[in-house]
Length: 177
Image 1: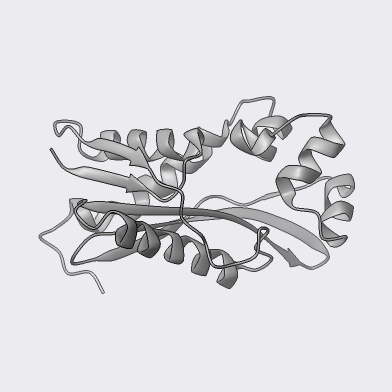
Image 2: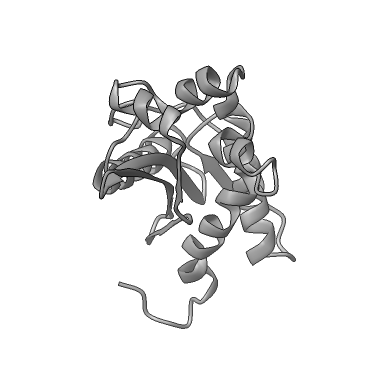
């Protein structure tokens, strides 16, 4: 049975990896487990480039930690200020012995109260907890779940990016960068 290592012990990230693989490979069983590894970037990535680097570092660090697995997934959430507003997104990097692929989630915006805290150096999950009077929201549905009243959960937000990052692993008869 192929093994998927998620570069996090966050249950949301483990579940979205599992659901993404299940969607793309419904007839194949996968063992999915998480491992705690560093991202090598700041706790709150503030640019797309830093977020991509964090997801890539996580996948590579997971491969070093568990070298016998088949796939490694790094998922990193980030923000970037564009035209005075913070765009929120995550990057998914999937690594195998022969290939690396990545995809981005959709983008959404934050209320001013959260943006103000980000500008003060507060990490998004902590800012959500402060503004919305929550506790450890990043292990739950995060900003997207809070802002949409769970119409989009953090898991359902990440799954499409996992699926898109798996395209080259599914479409093996085509050439990929």
